[in-house]
Length: 167
Image (cartoon, rainbow, N blue to C red):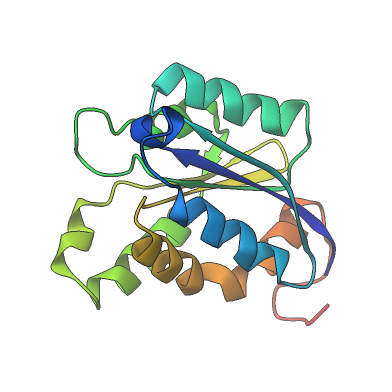
């Protein structure tokens, strides 16, 4: 369908201070680096700060033209968890089906999935998806939607083939 650039953004106060190793972001980088059609272009660990997250997402889309941004962390209900709010502030449209599919898949593993507040949305022609911060949960969430991503990105970039037609 195409070649898409990927940015992986880890939101972790401890990770940003060097007090915790980022396993979920590294796993996501390795996953997308191993997939045909995706190139990991950016990776960063920053504090879970709403204005910093929003500014980074905006820069990655508007200046770096990243096609797919995967965030990991900051989707729970802790006072410092601000990723969904930061994402909502910069997107033009939400894509609720992606978040619903991820939560549904997670619920088959743990009832704690009900606490995930991650969203997915579009800014310009870029897709931003929020994943949980644990490596296990991030892997389960991305695997739930991975088969649909290339088609969605193709359509987002203006692909004209009908949804029921293989391209």
